[in-house]
Amino acid sequence: MTTISAFMQDNHRQCDELYAAAEEAVANQEWERADKLWQAFADQLEVHITEREEGRLFPALEAAGGPGNPVRMMRMEHEQIRALVAQMVDALAAREQQQFLGLGETLLLLTQQHNMKEENILYPIMDQYIADQLAHLP
Image 1 (cartoon, one colour):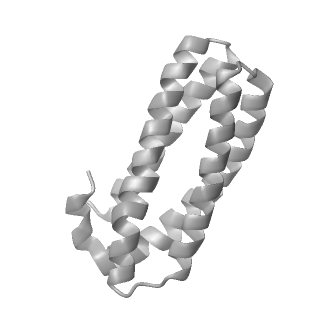
Image 2: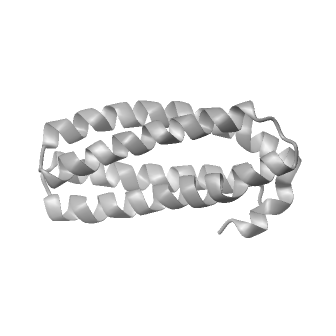
Image 3: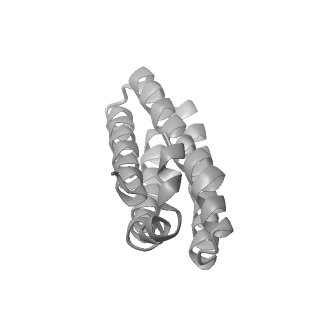
């Protein structure tokens, strides 16, 4: 059986791959390709953060009596990620390559740190408290 940790870590890698492809397209000024890849990334990120984590996993962990501090921290970081993504949407729409890539460096650092916390702390806690929730994720 797949764990929450394994499923969500795979989802992190999928988001990472889509982001890297979009970033490469922007770096090469392949704007139409960048638009499509960025939309795919943004859609996948939205599913990951809003539907899976905030919509299902966090409430299930809270209802099961799991520790609240990691969830609160992840929600705050999700807001920071959303703010950066919104700025990057604007930069992409304006074809501001350097602005987009600069914001992308910040997003990359934030998401790497965020994902490490989820993968090493939060998801193992979820595996312990709410393993049965995985059936409801995809």
